[in-house]
Length: 212
Image 1: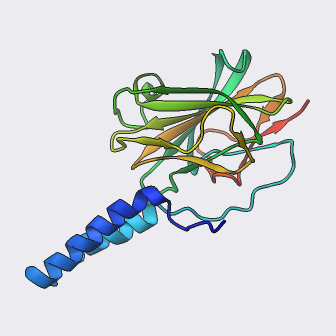
Image 2: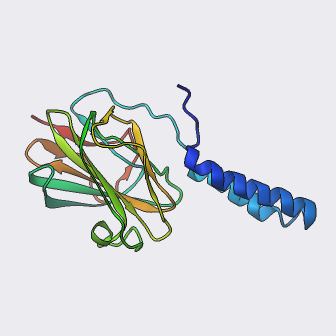
Image 3: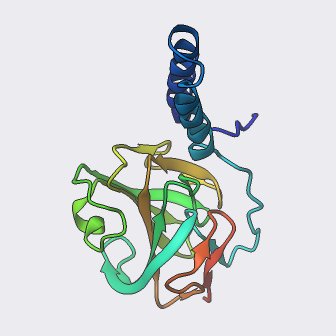
């Protein structure tokens, strides 16, 4: 199966701005068409889906998203069922917005909440904003990943459902136009490898390591 460098959800935006560019150039002024032309190019950039060299080590947990680590906090989680560390990743509009599975595993939990659209860097977004969570279980460790919409984002896209088995680094969803991704990992068996302020790369950066 051929993997396209741009996710399918982006083509409607790219095509729309490309059409506007052509119409403005033909009917109004070629100079003015530069603006929608730039927007069309930005849509190509935003919806890009680059290849990633995913580490094969089965003790490694990779980042589910590109972005900057906003915080690492201790939480309790009903899916993981034990004390956890949660890594919060902020994605700007310049980051790749495709989300990737941090481990290989089966989706044993899935939950979507239609919420508000506060800025993705605010601490409250994980509780009040639109969000979509999947829980992965590979028999060795259970991990929860949550996509959270931001101020500009108006839709979370998921390409998976309950019972699907994902490979580590496999793309499973998308958040449009600025967002936040959270990953919850058990404290007893996973050592966190990142800290606040670190830049991470989806499917590549090691954010945790399974110790047991």
